[in-house]
Image (cartoon, rainbow, N blue to C red):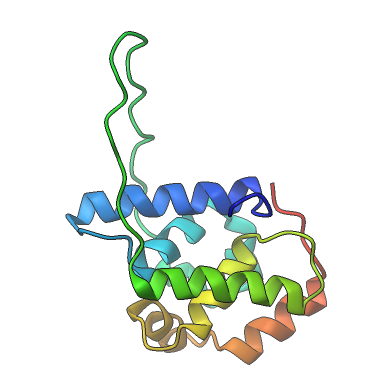
Length: 145
């Protein structure tokens, strides 16, 4: 499923897992995805200066398990809203004729999932779906790493 996702998009999803755990959430919600996106893609924040107020406080890198110690199980299900946001992000990538799904597409997917807290936070900071599409189409397809 994630073979078309850039390294940064994958890291954003991983960071959303840590945000969900930090918050004690049973699932990864769209606001956790937003925090992950903002954490891994500072250039996206530069493209949308109004996002600067949403950048989460840093959390330390995840601990690395010892070689002989089994890695802890960190599976958290994606909420239905997060699943829809990820599906929308793939559609947005196709719509822009990009060959990858990057953090910028994840942002568009969150905006399309309009009833989520993440979408409400984005709109409250002046980021709209149409405005984000225009901004990103002007930039062209950033091959985020």
